[in-house]
Length: 302
Image (cartoon, rainbow, N blue to C red; front, top):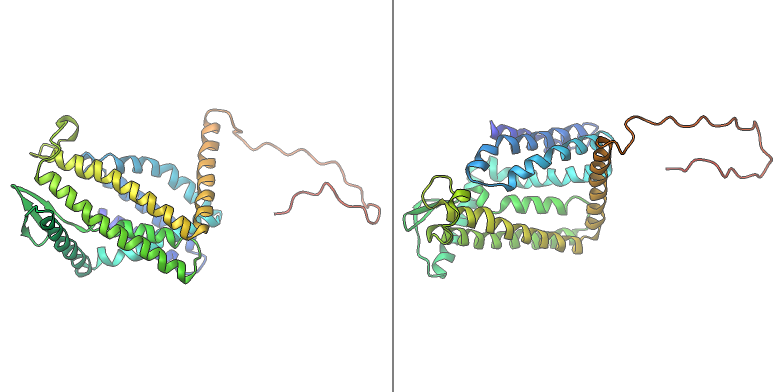
């Protein structure tokens, strides 16, 4: 079921890339089903004691409401945001929907991680083509461990606004190699921490009932997640320097979503208008005016 939600979301965003009046509805399909995916995947997140994605799922509800509202209104910033998501899916789709492509990437990551572990004098064995073992503990490397999701998302961000060929090339060089290499060291850290049982603490918070899982929880779900977040923020800052239009785009999005949330929150608390306020009836204007007289009271033009 979850795989179909992602597939429908992917198809919606890819359809958004095709010019036509259907684009806003295709983007809505993409956003609705990716949010649905977050909620359907909650049991797995809870089983891993992962709190980041459940928080994202809760926050996605107001995000989805505002996004749909402004897509239907034809808002430029939200269309650019949808283009970022569409480009991210375009990059990610081959790796998740063509098994040979995804497996090739996983194999490369496994090979390089094992090599790095040996460089750090931490010998491991392969129990299977993508399962690394040591001290009786095993870690499976899946597509989510390759960094391709983060690479696709950040390249999508870079594609949100029009850029030159030079900016595209430098954005790719900033994002893809950096995230890929950092992710290799992330995997090395998690494997060493889990198989070496570096963090066997606070089992009431970190345990899922599996022996030794606490070390995996702290290494993978907390430390590595926080460091990855910091790395993505730094890479995003680099993209803003490289593509100044992204800074303006991010500010416009912040103003739009934050302003909408504050407006709705104030309305719920009774501090904003609950219903449209009727405009005052204008006085009758003179049938004519002296030649050359300017109209200083005309409404502002959009």
